[in-house]
Figure (cartoon, helix red, strand yellow):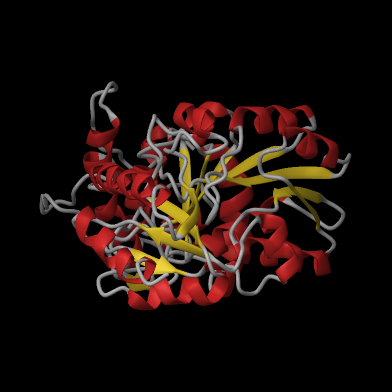
Length: 403
């Protein structure tokens, strides 16, 4: 396809930085000259004649044809997120789980094998296991033991899947080391970057091939929509993922894409402010007599603290977990005593969200799987928001003080 048949791009200097890309990258404005991105709520697009329509549906001419796989609002978000992640391409999906489904359907076949961290999000574990019925096998290994990853690789291995930091233990994997293992086996490394977002971490800089997102989290940032995305080379996306999207239809809605695109404009400002609050809370919780352990990569006590600081721009992130003395009953008591924190299973919101991972986000796993991942019944996860940090301390103290 020649350049004349491709969609236009925003004209920006080649050396603009991330915060500028977060606000300015996307599509040019329409003939009306709107300053804020337009929202295109349409299922399909008209064409000047039948021959043009035929060329566009055959991908001989770059144009918007049907919103299941091409829409200006979605393209706006995709280009912006790709710029932030440092990739040439991005494809939006209906959710983060849909993004993982798209990866497996687009890249794997029966007989192929995945190596995955045993500490990833509970639904990710269940989804990858479910693909076993279609002949795709998965081996789960320690998040932090590089040798286990290497030893789990088989001749049939096509993907390594990591989440760093993990939810909820905030375990950090060595992206560069895993990329080396994957590429030596002619496989690809997929990194779930939900907890950091590109504001803190760009996995492709360390060798990752595909970056996966639940846009529901920090990318939106205000808990408004469900969304997902995959960032990778434009060749991989166009050749392997777009064809599956056209057939299977796990597409991102234009409205949700527009919301995420607007959320990206304030991404770094929010994530840095929330991370600062999270670190202060983590230090405070470490000194609390009712708390057995605190998990946050910004703490010097974190087992992968040095690695996290190298990979995450020196910032620990805005999600932390802690284990209270007294098990499940004590954890429930701390959660129920809060008056400011929202009791929900999301994170990345401007509002602080508190949850009990063992019975919510990882509730579908067996107890043996939870124990293997280190998710004990006394664990509480906190997605730190933008409230005053001392108000959140007081909110947690209502329950912790009773212990």
